[in-house]
Length: 495
Image 1 (tube, rainbow, N blue to C red):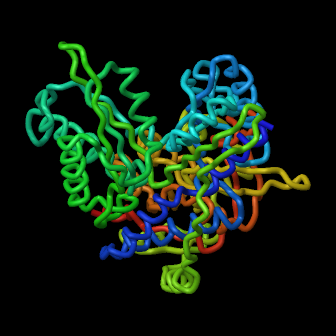
Image 2 (cartoon, rainbow, N blue to C red):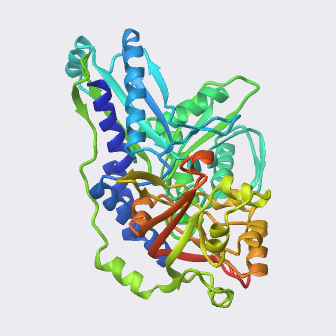
Image 3 (cartoon, rainbow, N blue to C red):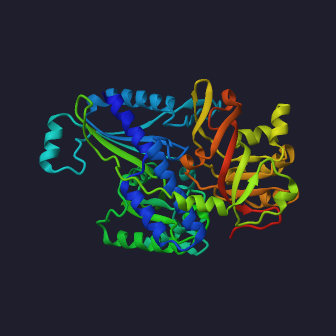
């Protein structure tokens, strides 16, 4: 019973956003005036609705699983086994992407959840009477946070004092603000904004990160009991949203949905500022179980956002159509900022495929022919095998900046013409696009159900055994896959 209900917790978190997050995204879309920002938020909301309707992961990066468990110590072993069993089952049925990799061998290990146990009765937000009743029944409170790799990569910890572009960040709240803004501004669109940021002032390195991540379980708008920290939260929100980084890093009024700050005692020699970032796909959930594993209470969201429907159909009709494979001449006519609808053959390729190609790995003649003039999607999808045929259930973009160092040689060796990812790329890629005649297109980070809906067929997969599901090279047939040209073959870049 424990494992089954924990599986349902995983399902709810992976396929459905909490109501407070959905409402914040709806509010952001309603006030957005930047066309690209409004489109990005519209696609995000469409993705949320599709994921819930189809019972699919709303982001292909189901992240690292962190369970926060409040229970008496004698039950910890039983709960850990149930969490492990539920995680393995969720991975098998496609609710989770296998995201644990052996750091030495590179072998994919499936998913290994992290469990933070707390020896404390589960009171949560219950009344005193309810909490007393739960303690008597040996209740267990389990909270789950699914946090993707992109948001982990833009999380950071710095020590004050620190030199920043806006001046010295000293050991005070003004310095904390400068440090936090420096971290957030440097991440630009890499963390799938609009996001949520949790900051811890002080503490030691390990404890600060633990508390910062745990505080992401709070609802958006949770008031801070410390008036000085509440003021600092508002200042950081106002400053970063006025930067116009916007949804997806493509421009707009909302870069952060919420900011929460906590403080911990520190050593006199140390003054850490720890920032845990969560993308708009802030997936969290909580259940309270009795001693037998029966559900006493859950906080699963029941709110379903509107579908864009005709609005999205109109967007596709107005987009410039790209049919793959595409010629160099046609690619050089594309301009940064254009909305495109891509159809035809694309290949997924992340870090390991890029490294393999650049380091001289041998591709089959069929793959070599297929990649020429094709699209390359920086993505690690979730795929399930049905009746001996692969089906992609979630397929959103990964952070493209990691692949910048590989791109010049990758384009030279493959002849690919259209790169698709998120967060933008750097100078090495910009020069390579001009040299070889290719473009980089922004897809909307986290919109995995939306992009999976554009996939008509899985034509094949290579390196699945060697690299694992996320890093394999998947050959896909797509229709009207929406993206925005971010870098063109003439040096044009979205600003």
